[in-house]
Amino acid sequence: MSDIDIKRISYLAKLKLPEEKEEFYANSLKEIIKWVDNLKKIDTKEVKPLHNVTEKTESIRNDEVYKNNSVEEILDNAPERAQNFFKVPKVVE
Amino acid sequence: MVIGLEVHAQLKTSSKLFSSSPNQFGSDPNENVNFIDSGMPGMLPVLNFGCIEKAIKTGFALNFTINKHSVFERKNYFYPDLPQGYQISQFEFPILTEGFINIESGQNQKKIRIERAHLEQDAGKSIHDIDPKYSFIDLNRVGTPLLEIVSYPDLKSADEVVSYMSSLRQVLMYIDVCDGNMQEGSLRADVNLSIRKPGGELGTRCEIKNLNSFKFIRQAIEYEFQRQIEVIESGGVIEQNTMLFDTSSGETRAMRSKEFSHDYRYFPDPDLLPVNITQEQIDKIQHTVGELPSQKLERYINELKIEKDIAKIIIAEKENTDVFEKIHNETEVPPKLIASWLVGDIFAFIKENNLDVLSLLNKTKAIGELLKLILDDIISNKIGKEILPRVLNDQGSPSEIVKEMDLEQVSDSGELEKIIDDALKGEEDNISKYQGGSDRVLGYFVGKCIKATKGKGNPKLINKLLLKKLQK
Image (tube, rainbow over all chains, first blue to last red; front, side, top):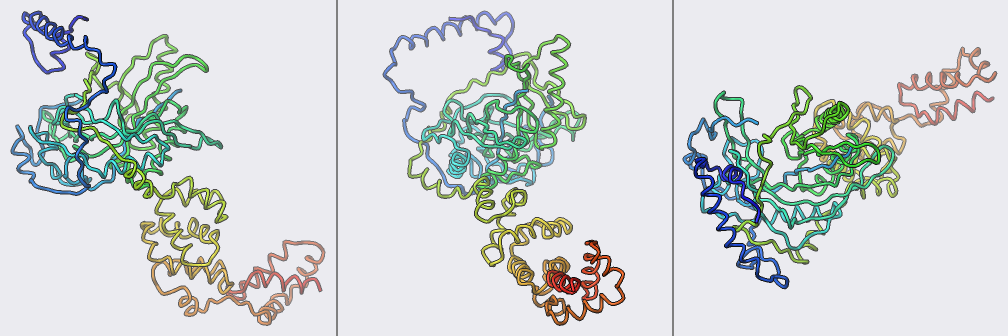
């Protein structure tokens, strides 16, 4: 198994790890992956890929508009608001 | 240069891809948002069949293989205008694969292959220029259905890209899949551009994101092409980058931080089951595709005998063809005459008065009547042009206007002969000039006669009678 880039993984997961703990988490993750890798021992040549455990087909609705909430209800969940916008720390690329 | 295009087309549905919020542009901020769109925990997305229908229609129009089995996956990335933390998209199993479209490239047709098209959600909108410290987020666009159409790198110039994009837009509008409004962002393109020496190996590509006008697409390509050439010629290497096109400076610049390359960690969305479509559903949708622009063009030229250039102007917009076909169905005037009037004076009138082409739909009877009067030589072409504005302004039916203004063409030979005789009086010099071989004098005489009839004389008849008299 290839080595784990713990910095990259914590970045993708938006987690800040203290530097002295990085090795600990990297090793724990490796253990988990090793355990899951046991699955690779099973021969799946004859098994069709499954995208969902229920094996059913998507339930579908018709193209109809149904409004059951207000702007106020939506913005109640906003950490901060400005007029009818969500207000967030500046993000500019 | 080598270019591939990713075009995002917003689908013209009433509701969103996975929620029943209105799919509508121009509403007040956060007006069209429900708990699914705002990414609240525990909300379940439910697929809108309208989007599947539009995708399948596109499949037929762009010669795709329509996949009966497709899968929605999560594309994970973090940005405030995407409250779910992932975009629901199709990755390994898109609904459409391997299509193509024929575009015009200079004088020739060129086939542009399309790798795939898949359904996905749009993100919201961030507004950065209201407050210096904060960004404001409007989630109205979240969950709007998009069809992302990914071409192969078959395009070789800015002209070809524009031609491809406008052909695509035309088709999507004809089949009523997308409204084609680029200004409102209904159709946007990401351009993947690399350069290579003739016959050489493909270079590293840069992707210019989110171009929403033909003008910007052209400018961005031309700028980026020069930039890459300069980097290579000064001994540098092109880094694979995502670029942004600055519309005010006309320049491209690198956008995303390069600290880590993107890792979207796609996986099948556990909230959504695979989509399985039946052959019956596909067959039913096929009947709704209708006539495509290329088929219409061919029919106009070959069956209706309209000149190619004029036919092209008409088919450029679907609404033009609606008007043309309505007039054609209502009258017995040759289609060629309808077409040239439509493209000429009628469209000029529409443009001058800032009207919508579709407003002509309830004037088709009057237009047909006017053309019939011209065809039957009751009025001259010239008079027809003169009264057209009155007809289009609903100031009476063409025949009423003609009667009221006493504009009927004079086609009575006796009357015309008298006028010609008058016109030739005192013109002995010019008559002998004509008999001496000067054709120009004939035009002078015709003009003089028509003037004497106040423009109502039938020019064909005047010409004929005049020739007879002059040859005596």
